[in-house]
Amino acid sequence: MPGIDEKDREIIRILRENGRITLTELGKRVKLSPASVKNRLEKLEKLGAIKGYSAVIDPAFLDEFVQAFFEIRLAIDDGSVDAILSRIAKLDNVCAVYRRSGENQILIQANFHNTDEVKDFAGLLKRKYFGKNLERIKITLIIDTFKENWVTLG
Image (cartoon, rainbow, N blue to C red):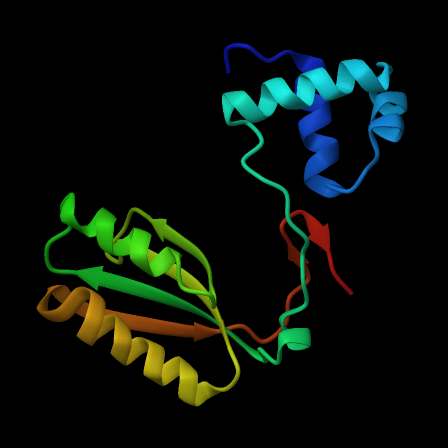
């Protein structure tokens, strides 16, 4: 990636595991002053290497006890689908939306209070977002999570 060096990559790797690390501690780990680290972080944000900062939250604390993946196969996958995916990505319970290779072009990860909401969401995808273009939805429920967003759980 142009504009970044090995120190920048080291900073990114550390942040991926601990986004709350202080500038002082980060500087110690990469052998730079806190001011230098701050300048590098600002550069990495401008370049888009750092897209944002967030916490890894246990969804159960939001009464979201069901996590699901939706694999979606579309009849026609063209540029018009991007606007639909952007709208779906803005839904509060949606964690991730991916366009992917293979027979199912879309992968959506979302959290729910119960399995009735999972069924309702699948219906919403058909009715409101994809309509007749939706050929198939395959739903997978998550039983247990051992690692998420580079954080080992449990």
